[in-house]
Image (cartoon, rainbow, N blue to C red; front, side):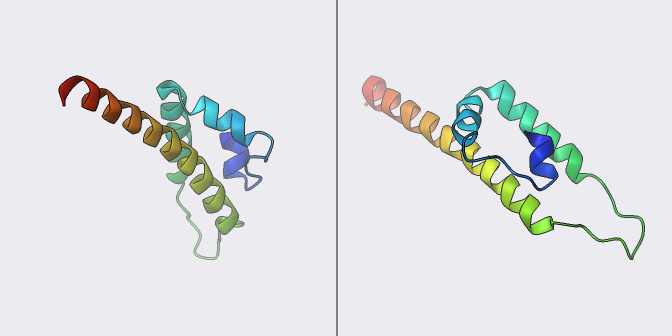
Length: 88
């Protein structure tokens, strides 16, 4: 999934739900972030060299990060409910 995102192919519509389900696990979130982060460390050596499909890749990375944020928002809501129930 991360290689297809970094190549500009993105995550398919049918796989979007599966990706959200995987992002619920912290280990998968850490794995995806580390894979995306190592790919961003590539440096261009030639001034004439340019990045192809940068916009497409950035949009795909943003979609994956949005999926992570949705899962984390759900976790925050659950924690907030727990705090209200137990400590309010």
